[in-house]
Amino acid sequence: MQPLKGLTVVTLEHAIAAPFATRQLADLGARVIKIERPGSGDFARGYDQRVRGLASHFVWTNRSKESLTLDVKHAEAAKVLERLVIEKADVVVQNLAPGAAARLGLGYERLSKLKPGLIVCDISGYGDDPDNPGPYRDKKAYDLLIQSEAGFVSVTGTPDEPCKAGPSIADIAAGMYAYTNILAALLQRGQTGKGQRIDISMLESLAEWTSYPLYYAFEGAEPPPRTGAAHATIYPYGPFPAGDGGVVMLGLQNEREWMAFCEKVLLQPALATDARFTANYKRVAERDALRAIIVDAFSSLTAAQVLERLEAAQIANAQVNTMREVWSHPQLKARGRWTEIGSPKGPLPAMLPPGSWDVPPRMDPVPALGEHTDAILAELGYGAADIQRLHAAQAV
Image 1 (cartoon, rainbow, N blue to C red):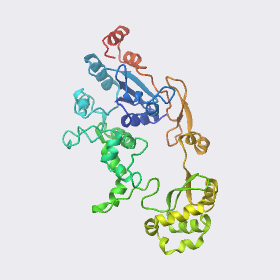
Image 2 (image 1 turned 180 degrees about the horizontal axis):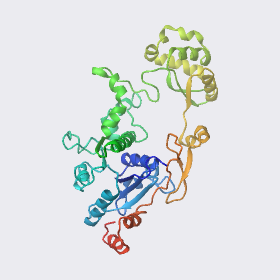
Image 3 (image 1 turned 135 degrees about the vertical axis):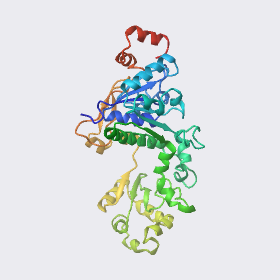
Image 4 (image 1 turned 90 degrees about the vertical axis):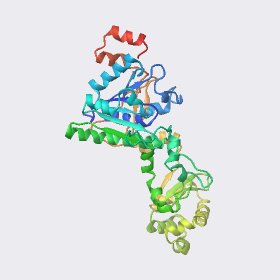
């Protein structure tokens, strides 16, 4: 069976960080019940309409979940939510504003007394430890802002302009650490029977991912420069134009590869012993001169010809693919990484999660807003008249 089958996750989530974490729990078989605001739901539903009228972010992070609409500030809805957590949940995940879950009665301190085995994962921008809140606890924290605070933007981009990462990397980092911490907490609970609180900070998550440039700038040293798609501290490593207008990405890691590159790709074996380029740090210092030599050598070749030479020399290389080309990538196709999921707009392609298991991952539909509300209420013991009354009161 799927490794998390039989576990239930109740999540008060929006945007990316928490939904990405819980979708991965769903991939492994967990039942994930997503609490959404009646009428509008997770605001990520409205980010765009690129997937047959559905939002691209939402489709990506919310398959295999059940949608339960609750106005969590309504007294009747609050009772429903508490019953759901106490009766059904193994894990509660939330990325509301700091302190909001506790005000709703969903803080770990209270819930752990009612259900000692419960795992509660709180995700926030800067951390939400009531004993050590820090000065940034209540600052709004969107992905771009965390990329900036964590220093990521300062080392990303061109010499003239810093850039953010294209994907929501701060959200993704936090979601991954939430996911792995929850898995570890489940293992610990299996040994001790006790739950715990997990406090995930977007800032801390992305700062961990930015630790190489942090150490590079150790004790006030200069940070790695912004070099666009090229590597800041290894050269040649990055994009180079070919004569037909195509762009080839290549990377060298050691002196053996440098010699092969000069001999078999540039067809200039003497360049390997040029005193300007005989070590990586020298090539980095002379990158402008070396780039001119490489671009000149590639100017009479097509991108395909450059790639052919790189392959023959066993030099790491890649095409700079567009999103359209990734959809049809031959390696993803050959490995059978695409499948199909349901959605309110019909079948959609979906990539299988990385990793391989004897049992396939769970790949269920993206839910419509409130699609499972009545069924979950009935599961909690609410009769048809009670459910109708909750709808009439706009509690659900």
